[in-house]
Length: 327
Image 1 (cartoon, rainbow, N blue to C red):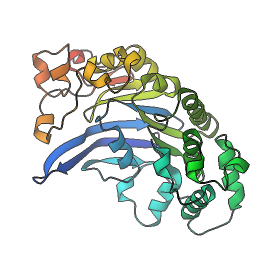
Image 2: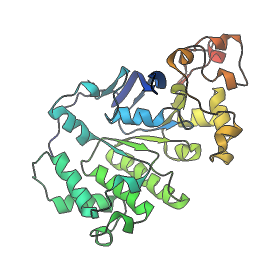
Image 3: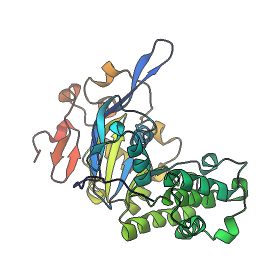
């Protein structure tokens, strides 16, 4: 398949002050899902976006994949703003950037067999230029994720397990040999052993093919197992980011600390035990002070002002507690 010429950059992907505001209800009340988020990835890096439900993780994924347009800010892939791509540039972008999602059952049309889904994806990415062996490309992608083509081809999605379908989702994404993979909660619906198997596949893709991966989830233990860096989000804003060992082993932000304290209890009651119930807030409310302040055990008067994203060595923290320690 043909490739576009992308600029050589220190970072393969950058988000610069990305904001997404939705309008809800009959009155069109603005609700901020993502608020001035900035981070960057180097080629071959695995970055995890962490946070509870409603923190903006999936919205960020959809903006990177061009499913949702940012209200403000820019998403830069190899030096180009992805929302300014036109014509053939869009196809070339999807040849390099692919996504996999939480529910593998909803990712496949139940009336078509496995090979239909893979061939359809391959043909759309090839842009009508078939200068390759279609069956061989599909077979290699399936074997790459641990699937035996003879046991899977000819079957309908409902005849496969959740783990097999998620492997098939990854295989479909690999057909274009992408450089960036956005994985939105890819293992949350799978059993523990299957989760580890799929995470190992992602790690192998990074190690052997220098693939860059954004892993979205709320399971801190899985993030620690596979990630190089992490970004912790709360209500659409970055609370803390940096190397996985620093952030998850020596957290600075009170929110990150509370997340880590709750690790043995990560289930649907987790948010309520922590006092982190979600609720919509409009743009004006979110622009006043620290978002986490109402629930923060370290809150003090300065928290009524919006904290900057401070640089502390190799990590960044959005908290007034460290305003005098910025490096």
